[in-house]
Amino acid sequence: MGTMDRVIKLQNTKTRKKEVFEPVDASNVRMYVCGPTVYDRAHLGNARPVVVFDVLYRLLREVYGVEQVTYARNFTDVDDKINARAAESGRAIGDITAETTQWFLDDMGELGALEPNHMPRATEFIPQMVAMIEDLIARGHAYAAEGHVLFAVESWKELYGKLSGRSVDDMIAGARVEVAPYKKNPMDFVLWKPSTDDLPGWDSPWGRGRPGWHIECSAMSYELLGETFDIHGGGNDLMFPHHENEIAQSCCAHPEGEFARFWLHNEMLQVEGKKMSKSLGNFFTVRDLLDQGYPGEVIRLVFLQTHYRKPMDWTDKKAKEAEATLRKWRALTAGIEPAPSAAAAVLDALADDLNSAGAIAELHKLAAAGDAAGLLASAQMLGLLTEDMGAWASAPSIDLSAYEAKLFEARQKAMESKNFSEVDELKAAFVEAGLEVRMSKAGVELVPGAGFDPDRLEAL
Image 1 (cartoon, rainbow, N blue to C red):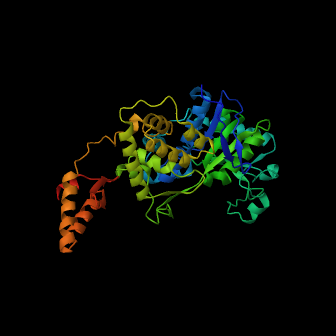
Image 2: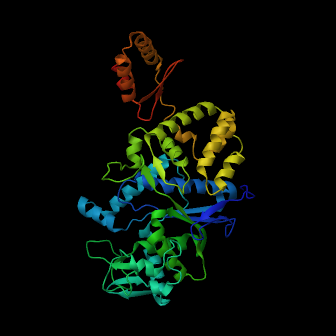
């Protein structure tokens, strides 16, 4: 059993307030998080909600007990982007989604993310989606038109837009919505759409077709977690329209339930201070970073150093600092048994709206105090310093003392001759090889960075 006397407070998007978290049923704490659409490798931004909600999952397990927490995160494996990818590559849709789903799990595993209890794929829940759509039509919240079924926003007008803080009238005024002749209201959204022969499709009362995006999560969360569950999470880019539409469908189909009681949204990710985009050339996948030599554990620590509700800036400098920190912590905890549980101060930080930055600050304090056992237990609770994450740190270390001596000697000479060209050349070569050069009065220190390549030193 966990330590249920610890009070968790979470910022609830639904109420715009930080609230004490009390689960519907402490013996079955339930969380649903919107997962990826699987047509390609996950980019770095896709990884942020995975790491954020992995930390929340770990905290809930710590407080309520491992067996008492149920976490579901879906895979959207029916989508127009996937269809387009299949059309352009000539590959079967099932092959693409199977491969990309496995890529996602592998890449997130490298970041230390635990696998959720349920990982439903949309294509496995089509009958439940059809049943839910039929129910919405029967209750007067949806209508069929030209092979499509649409949700009637007017039928839920007084509550639609509450999560994102918009009114239906405002939304229509500023709408960039798809205007279609069969819509009664421009804000009405698709629950079911017709499929041509070359597209994935399922038989339904409205003809052969496929579900709209929003209905998937509503049907899967109902099936796996029930009509009322504790937490629904995702990136704040999903708040509107995806989450707003999920609430409308779910509350109209199951008016006796509350759907999700707490809504948590993480902020977006930037790279070196700029929005990540292909046009800026700063767009990369998690796999790109791993292949460039950034260990998954380092990426995780960089993520955890920013509160989930603040924009996170990925920088190379942060990665280098995180790597140095982890090497230090791993050296400090080598051969040590972890304490029986994570330090109270670390858990207190996490229990305060998932303040992971505060939790990491507490790890630094434990390290400074020499509390190796406490540091190890606390870091492992956060998914750091685990045995399976550590292979990168125990890679054969190269003896850099000869190179340090060479640079030191060159600097001593330069002090006398006032000609620093050799020093500058050596420094540039070391940096090029992925070393950080630290020079002080006491001497020279070379610290391997994330992209360190020992072979480049051989040339020197």
